[in-house]
Image 1: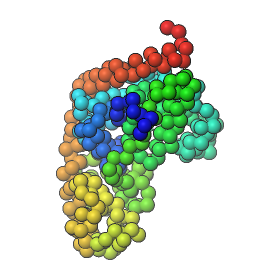
Image 2: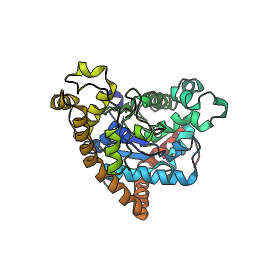
Image 3: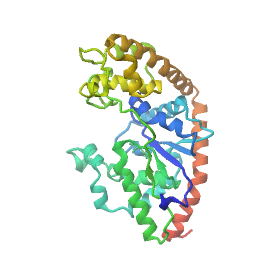
Length: 339
Ligand code: TRP
């Protein structure tokens, strides 16, 4: 991108500390974060300030923040090579978000579909924070002048808004290349993981059925049980993509297998074409246990050493400030703040 020629490539992504992390979070997003560390500098942020746009019990918020941080470490985010921290420790996010509240237009935010979904019918009672949530997200990214933002489909609109904010700030303050225009970064085939009870719905932390999802903290028994009980149709395994297309539950399990074994769905189809589902489920249960148990164990061990976990987050926050503070200093000058 020509707009970003003066900005060094930098990845920024955020994850909310709400609810338990599940296989969909892992295969859909977090696994790619691990791979990205090899090719670019990366900043990963547990966005606790975004979380409170919807009511969070304080004790649960701190527990979830630590749990998500532990999961990031457990899956292989390297806290020395990358920067891992929780958002509220770095004041630059809030400070830049305020400036962006004054750059972004009401009309832009009124178009955000996620606000409409989350606020629902009770819009008058939604927090103001929920409405301006995308401005804080833009601040997260631009406080570091990040150029690449791995996000799912549902966040693309917010990222476009971040680009609009960057562009308007650059124009308003006569600083043509001050902020980069951050790009959504889709890194290889992130798996869209669906509910184990209904192959047409996304796997979600808010589904009432525990059997719809596999949590990263599940033990081996729970993982195997949930896979064996996963909904399937009565036919044998499909032998081609076409044959799989109208069978969402089969497709989901094949995609999960592919994601966990780092293969393409085609390779998995070729291996299991025509097999009985029970045999495939056994293989998938073994694979899922083998891949997820070490993650769960590492998470638990990080969570038992809270001092060490908190030290890692504080260290990440200190390194994040070293990047963001000079950017904020320049923002203050450009805006005309004294001091
Ligand atoms: N809004 C994102 C989500 O709900 C989380 C997020 C916050 C984020 N700040 C970010 C993602 C900055 C990417 C970059 O998934």
